[in-house]
Amino acid sequence: MRKTILFITSLLLIVGCVSFQYKVTEDLDPYTKTNLISESWNRTHGISGSIELNFVYEKNLDLKYLSFHYRDIDWLFIGPKDSFMFLFSDDGVLTLSPSTDVSTNVSSGGGVVMVEEWGLIKLGEEELDQLLKKTIIGLRVNGKDFHREYNTEFPAIQARWRAFSTKYFSG
Image (cartoon, rainbow, N blue to C red; front, side):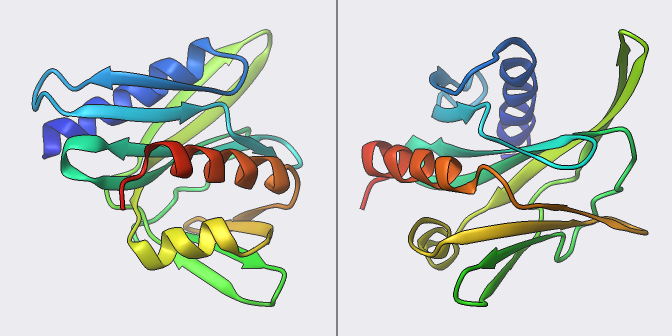
């Protein structure tokens, strides 16, 4: 399982670095021979960076994940507990935590230094249902000492999530 998670995370990093528009890819995990279906480039932007929020489906095991990839000029140090708070139009809040260790990197180019933090959040049916059916109006990502808030692009992100789930998720 750990090798599968590492493969998914590596795949998402590679796909995220080379694509510049939304797409869905299907790959075979070489370790477990599991079919992995994932989105890329499902982003919302904040003041100085962005966070990518993509569904990943491990088809053979019927496991659903939300991958995240934070890119900004400041570290958040996303923690293992209650790091993602989705805010809904009905005043509801869905709090999610990474299922894996959060990976980090520093990259530079063109005179800009960006920090990156990424990982996976395992989704149960209840969390998935809320992300697909409720209207998201914002996201707060909590770090060790401060947080980032995002409140744009959610109608497009949710429309893509709905299309992805209709096409790929079983049940």
